Length: 198
Image (cartoon, rainbow, N blue to C red; front, top):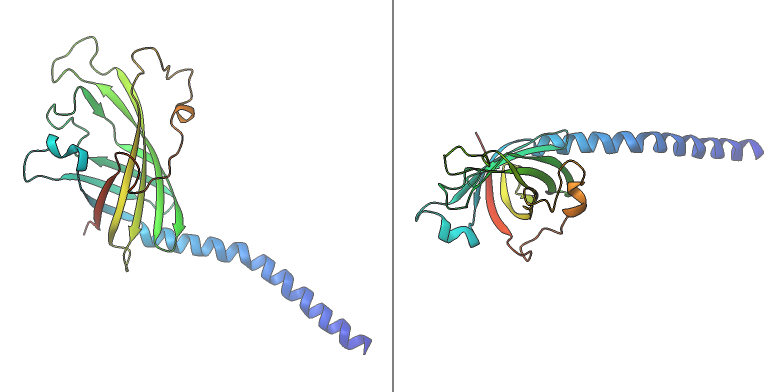
């Protein structure tokens, strides 16, 4: 009888050890599979919303985003070159950051990009001066097949670098630009539809 119980206890202990060893591996494998599923270059078409009056009629606001399987992301959109001066004097770099999985078909990306002063083609003492830093949060909701879907982007702009209120050398940009809960109810939210580029 004692021998029988000893065998049962040994089996249970072995099962627990194996399960404990397999769980992290399974999670990593699942994360890698999901990363590969969403990885790719996507074309985004924004519902311009507040930017509607700035866009030429019949045009939409486009963007291209590359989602990497390792959790990084790159993005650029049609406003980065000031829309022909309609967005003032600031020109933007591409947006770079990281994404994480929210659920089975949703990822959330948090990125930053720089805003530089431009004098509408004229070179001056202010051309190329760092004007601000923008945090861009993007939510992607994938359809079946992970090749298309819908989402929303939310921006936070810190655009007072040149005025001396913000010093990019000594101030930490993330302290002034905390993460936001990005969804359609967020002020200035920009909903979009996206498709994988084939």
